Each structure stands twice: as C-alpha cells, then as structure tokens.
Length: 187
Figure 1: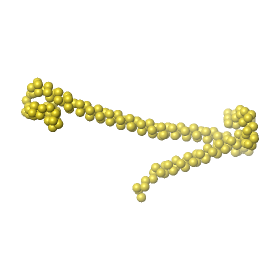
Figure 2: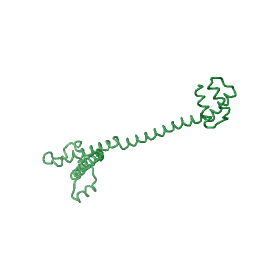
Figure 3: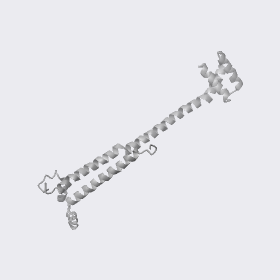
Figure 4: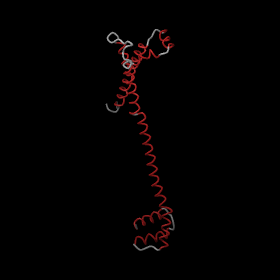
C-alpha cells in the first residue's frame, strides 16, 4: 500500500498538483517508513480522489466503452454474414431446386409422351400441374388457344428456363470461386 502511495505522491509532484513542499515532505515520510499525520493523510486522500481516481475510472470506462464498441461491431459483422451467408442462400436455392424438380416431373411426362402418355385417368396427385386445365377459367383457356399454346407447352418452357437458370448460376458461382482463389502476388 505504501508503494502505491509513494507512486501517487510522485505522480502528484510531477503533474504539479497540490502543494509541492508538503507533497515532498509526505514523500520523504513514506520513503522512511514513518507514519503520516492525520492532516497529511486527509490531504493526500483528497488529492488522490480529485486527480488520480477519476483518471483511473476514465481509463477503465474507456476500455469498457471500447470493448462495447468492438463487440457491437463484431455483432454487426456476424449479422451481415448470416444475412447474406448460408442460411438465406441455401433456403432460396432449395426452394428453386424443388420448383425445378416439380416442373421437370411434369415436363418429362410431356417430352416422353409416347412412352407414358398423360390422360385424365392418371392420378391427379401424381401430376398436379396438369390439373390446372380443369381449374383454369374459360377466359384463360381461350387466350391460350388463341395463341395456339397449351398448359403442357408452358410447363416444358418453364422447366427449360429453370434449367438454363441453373446453368447460369453454376457458371457464376464457378467464376466467383475461381476469383476468390486467384492471388496475383504468387507467380
């Protein structure tokens, strides 16, 4: 404890806080190991409370504030990674894959029409998209017949567009992967 007091007194003398003559006297008393008078002890305590403890508290609060700021920054980074990271992308890709497979199931039946022709007696749960023909209003059916298209052609076209989209996405991710591995400093 007396070593801390000696350091505090030396700091007060160096920063010219308080009466330097009295502080030099207190310093010599502490270095000699003699007890301080009550008035000198109160004086020293008041100077330490006024000049040293606030700077300690401030530096302690500063470090806590810096830690809070750094923690908030790390939290923001994690949220940003999660937002654009695996959760969102995998969810979208899984839904897109399911829709592609669903349309593909129907399109393959149309493309292989000679092998497995679809007719109304086929289980409606096996090919639910083709049940839209019975649900579509007459206006939609009239518009489709005006342009000489039918539901099977729309399903095959949608499936072809989705397959093309998978190819483009795969190519884009391949380029992104290759760019992430490219390091121009290594020759």
